[in-house]
Length: 319
Image 1 (spheres, rainbow, N blue to C red):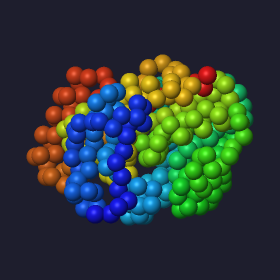
Image 2 (image 1 turned 30 degrees about the vertical axis):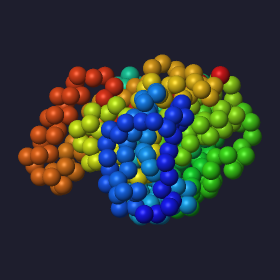
Image 3 (image 1 turned 60 degrees about the vertical axis):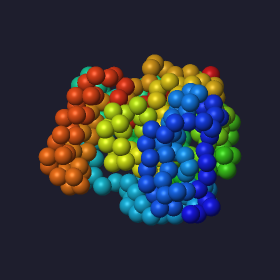
Image 4 (image 1 turned 180 degrees about the vertical axis):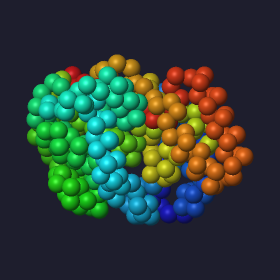
């Protein structure tokens, strides 16, 4: 039993009490299991116990081929379609006539497909920072649309791959970079907030770095996901033991307000995203009959809730 696994406390209210909603076997965890616990005070779900700082690196190293680090896998044609759809939601200056004409159709589709959609209509040369950028997939797009982009990541592999694409990816924690105050217009945390040991640290620093009125885009696994309840340890966004936090809308909104951000509209979740992909994975793992039954249970249960999708998205503004 490694000493590096540590007990955790709630990032929102600092409570240590909580009820296990899922036990996840792991040979390194104390007693051979860690838990997704629901805070008894505010309801935030967290991993407890979890790998400590000195032990965490080897779990990322074990996750070889982690999609945030390996680079783009789309072919040129697929990438053009990907960019065209993003243009429908971003409305960048200089967009093609076809992109502008199709925006009423591609915009809603992009907002459905992509967890992060940055509105580029307000200004040119928008200064964008992504925390936990990996190789910087979205930053590559934003740079091609005239943005001044910067990424940060703890992966030397991800940073190196980003530089191959011509994107400035800095290696290290956000606070270690000592970026100037009010130096960015937009910040992105796309599936990175759930990875950090203490989200309060990143959000405090982002409040300092963003200009007043700047926007923060967040996408995280949804603690209220229907598929988490149905699939348990097989849930695709569990990513054990790399994901530490499973916010729902209430706990995420409470956390960002604590650090001087105001949500722009309500938090939203994807609903039936990745259903086909999850079904295919389940077929390979569990067989056709079990996978299909699970798919239909998911479709049935997801119809009964508006916030049961796999991914929670929130846009907020720096006060």
